Every structure is written in C-alpha cells, then in structure tokens.
Image 1: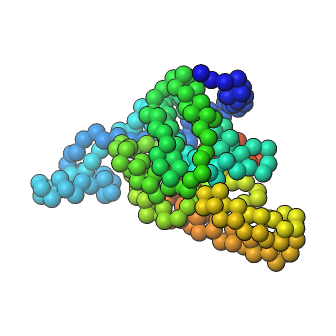
Image 2: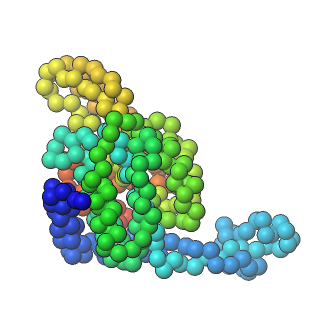
Image 3: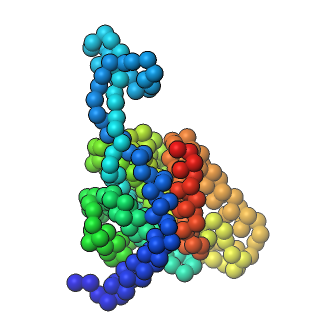
Length: 291
C-alpha cells in the first residue's frame, strides 16, 4: 500500500517532469544519446579505410591476417541509475534533501528515456546493495522506479561506492548508459570507476548542498558526520576557520574533477539550493557538440 504523503510526492514530481519534458527537454536527451550505443555485428578482414582501433588482435593472431570488429547502432539504449542512498543522502539545508533532489533528477531523465523507447533500471546502494530493478520500458515501470526512490529511507551507513561500481561491472555485461548519482564522499573508488568507465558510458551526477562547501558565520557549530558518527565543534565566527573549511572542500572538489576528467567520465553537478534543469540541458548540448 502507498500512503497519501508518498502518493502526493510522486504526483508532484510527475507534474514537474511532465512540464519540463513538454517544453522540449526530451529532444535534448535524444540528441545527446541516440546513436551513441553500439552493439557487436561481425568480424571481417581488414580493408583500407577501416579504423585501426577496430582491429581484433585475437582473431588477427589466429589467422595471420588483419581482421576488424564491426558494430551497428543500437536501436534502443539501456539506462541504469545507480543512486547512493547512504546516510549523507538524507542531508539538506535548503528546500529539500539531497535524496529528494536525486529522485526528481532521475525521474526527469527516466521519463525522457522512456519517451524515446529506451529501457531504464535502478540500483540503490549504501555500504551494501539495497535494491536492484532491471531495465525495462513503460510508464508503470517508470512509476515503480520513482516509488522506490522516494520510499527508501537512508539508514545510518557509510558509502560503498567502490563496492557498487564493482557490482555494476559484474552485473551489466552489455554496454549501457550509467548515471552514477552520489555526493562522492567516499574513499578508494578510483580504480573501479576507471574500469567501469571503459566498458560503459558512465556519467557522474554529483549531488551537493551549499553547507557542504561553506560554513555560515554562526558562532559555535557542531558538525556531525552521519556516516561515521564523528562529531566536532568549530567556531564558525572565526574567518580563518571558515576559510580553512572552504579550502579543504575546494581541494576535494579539484581531486574529484581531475579523476572524472582522466577517467573519461562526464559530470553533472546538481545542488539542493538551485534548479537543476539548466545544468542537465547544458550537459546534453555539450555531448551533442562533441558528437
């Protein structure tokens, strides 16, 4: 059974996303993703003009003649949303929590994908795999994903980002588009992220909140890490404290940006204090331009 408050939240997101899609948003999605997926077709002998990067070296070694792998465009893309639902997702100092923002973001992209006849799936993870819904089509399936996202309550736990990336690598054998939705407040996930990015079209969606990058001048403030349980009191009225906090956050952000760049991972940043549609539209345009 679905309680009235959950039904109201689902309905609100449906209305918001429907208006955005009706304004032409789905066309941007189609331009950014359609034709990007490839599936294997055949191996044949190399002919002048073929791409060197398409050479199948295993077949070439066995036959003694150059062979290339040929691919055809997929008529249908497979999308998967891998959403971090650890305790930090329950934080929000503005109009909504990070989890609520992530749910609305995923709903908008999912409804756009289904409108373009693509399939959509969902993986929820914390320090363990919480739930997996295989990719499928249909409005009822999209509503199921939305219900799963809104209904899930983050529990006190860490972020097993490396574990989730490894799980995805074992789970998804054919190339797909993966939206990795997280605040990326985790350690030692660089290698599995690079591995997954080589096999799939991986897009990092960083969900943030203004208070995670700057402290207000509010005197003594108790900072509590919901994932580790650590608590520290700082005097935010001291400019040097606020500056040190901001600099540390900036260094973490720079390391993350460099990781995504070097791994070939596209990035979208969304924030609880801002609207997110313009960031997504800019992302679509950038991908279309690169094509």
